[in-house]
Image (cartoon, rainbow, N blue to C red; front, side, top):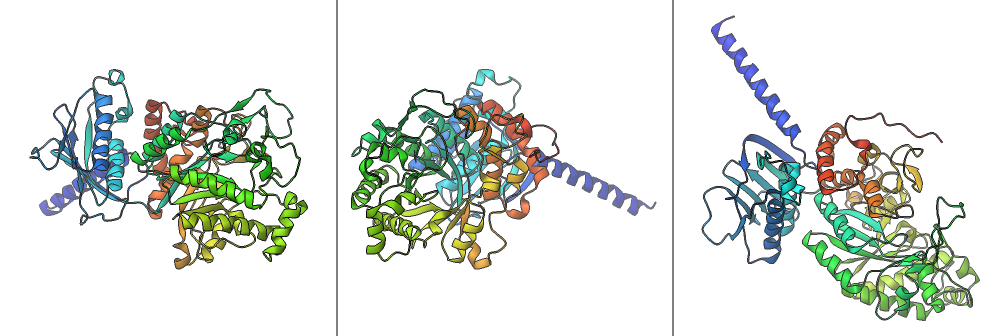
Amino acid sequence: MTFISKTLTLFLVGLLSAMAAHAQADRDISIIPEPVSMDVQDGAFEINRNTVISADLSRAEIKNIAEQLKKAIDSATGYDLAVIDDDYQQPASNVISFVIDEEGPVSQEEGYHLTVSEEETAVEASTSTGLFYGMQSLLQLLPAQIYQTDYTLVPQDTRWTIPAVEIEDYPRFAYRGMHLDVGRHFFPVEFIKRYIDLIAMHKMNRFHWHLTEDQGWRIEIKQYPRLTEVGAWRDSTLVGHYGSERYDGERYGGYYTQEEVREIVAYAQEKHITVIPEIELPGHASAAVTAYPELGCVEGKDYQVKTTWGIFEDIYCPSEETFTFLENVLTEVMELFPSEYIHIGGDEAPKAQWEESKLAQEVIEREGLEDEHELQSYFITRIEKFLNKHGRQIIGWDEILEGGLAPNATVMSWRGIEGGIEAAKQHHDVIMTPTTYLYLDYYQANPETEPLAIGGFLPLQETYSYEPIPEELNEEEAQYILGAQANVWTEYMPSSEKVEYMAYPRASALGEITWSPKEKRDWDHFWERLQTQFKRFEILGVNAAEHFRGAQPEMEEPEE
């Protein structure tokens, strides 16, 4: 071998070794969701007692982000880092800076640019939201113990280092959501905040709060106190699956005061999450009509807040009294929630009581409607016009397509993807949330060994495989897919721990589905990163399902 060829061989071996080491470093970094681009470099930034956090403290939302980072670092390390205004003299090194740069490399509203060297860590973005998501990635670059809130429990040899890296990142979809049903089971304010924290950790930006149901009305409405005095409580709760006819015999209920709602909305805003309230209509109205029977269509009926699950015939009567009631309720809701969207339900509304109602039939005749399906469309359109007049937009489950879609409605497609396809072809905005991929009340492993769930089978790998844009849509129609949401219905989730068990880590998969580029999604790499996420969950005390920790199991369909 000649000197030149030997030298070339050594050079190639060295290059390949460096490339392999670089690739391994890339694999060792565990950020969920996967960033758009990431270049891992040599070296690391080390946080110590002299590290300084720099930001524009004159802007409250940026100061809040800097303070959130300080709190996370101080809680885990025992340090007391200084937060300084970036108008003052910057230290030459050992600084973590948050910088608004509208002309920077990432101008997308929720995007960010994160650079880490041995001297400095910098998060740049065109908005405070981008800075917030850059902070979330920064936390995931640190050891998992950064999520520890008692530094005395952190191993003394922990080095608070951030690998040198350059990340450019932004979301694929504008709507990245998690839902929680508090109607079937009620959860305390502190858990709702924790739920929001986990949503934010995964760079999701919508919390769909399902507040009214047949089994309980959960939001205080000042003008109608019986909604919570009567409608928030049921006499008993079903034990076991449908048809078991076993009940616990215990009064159950609860509701959120308007003060608590404001507290939660403000907390979510600090996490750059919009809370979307859902007030169900015209169906799922048992709790409301139990409180105010005059809103129902059956005179003299002994309405009851339901003690079991399922679909019930109780429905709001399309009277002027009902519309006045709903407009008054929604006026109070709008005062509490700044969200552009108000979810109005629209699903699972049997029409039997309308068919038998003289008043409902008179409305059908008066308005020239063909049938009860068109009456539902009329009902929802009236509510939409009221909300539009106040600068709000409605979201409804895909049943709102039946009888004609309200002019400006956004459709949440849950009964498969067909409703989403139909709405997008009609040029209506769509949020995809099909049961087969994104219903987190379904079993995630063998039902024989799992805690009780509503049914179905949805393992993590199946959720991760979901593609929100249906192939049936052309390029123009695909633009109407705003994003996706996972739904957590709580018939069989009586505790906060059970909610976390059913939601995570499947919600982690949703975070990646809605944020990361389609071409960067890789199941094996996600599984590897998920193992670090489990360490974070453990430190945070999240009761995530352990089926997906460790070596990958074979995915098997449960026996029928």
